[in-house]
Amino acid sequence: MFKAPETSFGRSLCIPRLSAVGALRGLALGGLLLGQPGAAMAASNGFKVTATVPVTCLAHADSAITLTDGGSGSGRVTESCNKIGGYTVVANYRPLGSDEHATLIYNGVEIKLPAKGSVVLHVSSQATIVSVAYTISDVHVNSPINLELDAQPA
Image 1 (cartoon, rainbow, N blue to C red):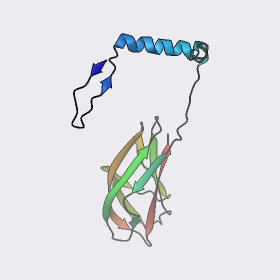
Image 2 (image 1 turned 45 degrees about the horizontal axis):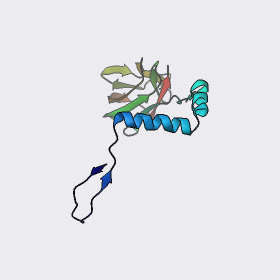
Image 3 (image 1 turned 30 degrees about the vertical axis):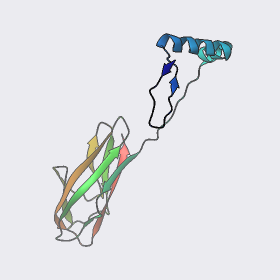
């Protein structure tokens, strides 16, 4: 036994010394006393834990992306997807009339919005979280257009 020096409370503590070998002997003896067959059975049978993480892909603008005639603007989009194979970001909007047009610069790439009402903005080949800048320019529309962003796993 190790006797600790007197404390300010006037008492001493007795702490048993335990070597590493002594600790292992104690664990081994405890295993024998607690029933070694149960431990052997758990080691031989074992178990397996599996989990499934759902695939989630999002594209979220810092504010609504609305195109108005003669308007311009800029902002950021946060893209996030945990699909290992990547994802695609698409902008959906109402179809453009024959006399309407607009330009979107997304992550440094200039995109003239096609009349059909949908355009691919970004394709990623990996899971990631990234913040992307966009700018709207050269807008001529008869009525406002709201861009709705969608991220889909590849």
